[in-house]
Length: 125
Image 1 (tube, rainbow, N blue to C red):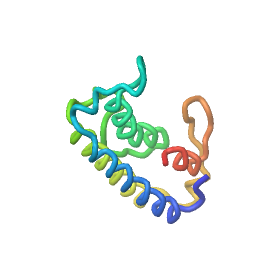
Image 2: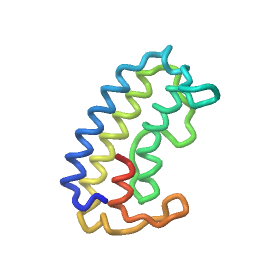
Image 3: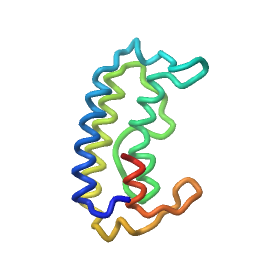
């Protein structure tokens, strides 16, 4: 569980930079590749990563900019990478503006369970 925003921001910076590098390596052609027969495509998985940031944090009351939960997978890899960048930056801005270390102990309904916000950030990473 994340117990301080300082530690979260350090981890988030590291992890989101690596995710950006990965997303930047995707091509439009790679998006339609399924990892196994009947499985999600690379594009769907990448889009899920981009969509999850605003979707998950919305459940905590934050308004994080980015892809909508029901938006279709873009046809272009660059659009997925851009949506991720928007959401990752917006998350950092929202946390700095609205949360404190004490906020991390507050709880929210997350997918039918009750999670402390520090757990939510840990799961997000």
